[in-house]
Length: 442
Image 1 (tube, helix red, strand yellow):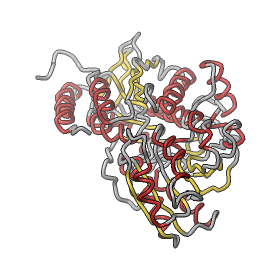
Image 2 (cartoon, rainbow, N blue to C red):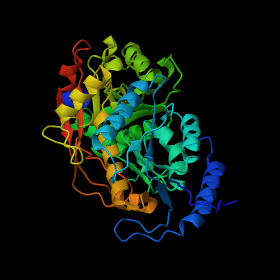
Image 3 (cartoon, rainbow, N blue to C red):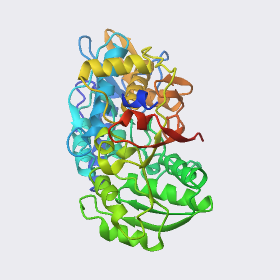
């Protein structure tokens, strides 16, 4: 039943230096709850001074309370190196941005998506049960976003991801929504179609390679990036000799490597996370047919842990252009240099993976959207959920740490500029991060 007695409050290093389990039942429950709370919200006519039409409900923040947003990232397990810098970027952004229309912002519990559908679904269910939450920054992994996005967005909240790259979450870049697209999902990271194309162009045009094989781990991120590479490589005149999947839990990669080695490919592209990437890189040179193959991967392995391994020497990485240059975040005034200094001073170490600045920009954009979609009435901050999306849908020319940010109709907001770096020395990661050998700007 709906509670009509009150209005519900379904209630703001690395980057610089390298330049479902089914969710239908849960989603239906969330939609029912949203419809229920919407009956209360009709008492509040839209304020012409703020964005939104009330169609997704409102959030009320009484005087003395805080605007509620949440972080949902991979902060434990093998992929924590990716999610922890994201979470920290959000924390810094909230601190730098300050109050929203006079109201503090509270991140509350920092949730863990475990880089898995089950982990993301469980966390998302907990988040949407708190009707005060306006938006969420995360998750870290595409496979987690596939599970979390339907739940979070069905609740009228927004989900703003800093490091998801699967095209299925946004679009095919030809005007068609991806299989897993949800209205209310946004990201500052690249669309993986560009990531795959950048590496394919480098392999064909930069290295002059005629044949390649690709390996993925079956999840929405890995398979879509590998497919983007394969499609682009063939479109550019190359031959894709093998396209195979591993199990994430495998340690013996020789059977799959042997399968793709049949035609002696000149390159092997494997967009996977650790520890699978560790084993593939170590074992590939020992498989007949792959002894001389050039090893190619993407930003999932662009982290200190992998790059410090001896077998990582010589690997090429495609990923977001991290040469931020003379950028600054227009909401806070932070530059890449000052933000990195603050990161290291606050956490005692540099970021371990590349998307910390993407998380920072995503968080400030969310807070700007909340500010634009809210106003104070009788001491209470009224936030229009539809207005938050209205603001983000219209973002154009926003200056962020990662560069100029423009959001398209499917939630792709990143700059999309992609680079390839050549990793030469596991003992000098910074030099490798600066060793950009190819760039692609769609």
